[in-house]
Image (cartoon, rainbow, N blue to C red):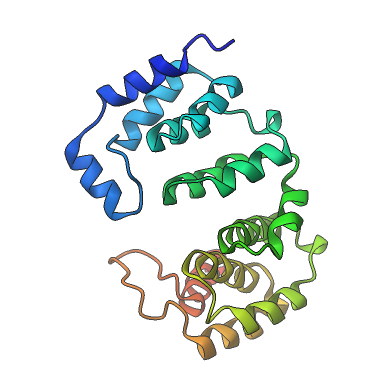
Length: 222
């Protein structure tokens, strides 16, 4: 049993509620008012507990679900649990953390990628593309990169926003990490112009794939 109960964890989150943080978070699709640095500090104090993580997820409280993702052990969650969690995420941050902190670190990541890649839910497909990007970086030999570029070329422009972002990330990383396919990745990005006008702060890299590829290659090879 977890040493911290779900009621205690939710009470500690409620004590951290800040109206200003809620206003900022809600603008980004996250209905909670907890500063994320304070949430991470709370997770550290509580320690890892997948049982508590499960209970926090079932609470249906957005901050509670985020805290749960921070205290879960990815290898202790089944593919069915991760899939169910993905389909019940209630915030943009929860989707992002579930993919990056749980699915990518799970020994079941490969199966989840295949499971979600042609799913009817665009958020599931977005998760599959994020897992694909991780594999482009670490295990490109396990992928048919030309087939991925074919699909990106067909679907990127009209993909739903979250899926489009993740698919664009895969395009950029193919261009960055595979010199043999870099020209084609650049051509696809230039032709489709996806995220070309995305507002990018000074000293930050644009998510527009050709600009992203060029900048990262410059850093890697310069």
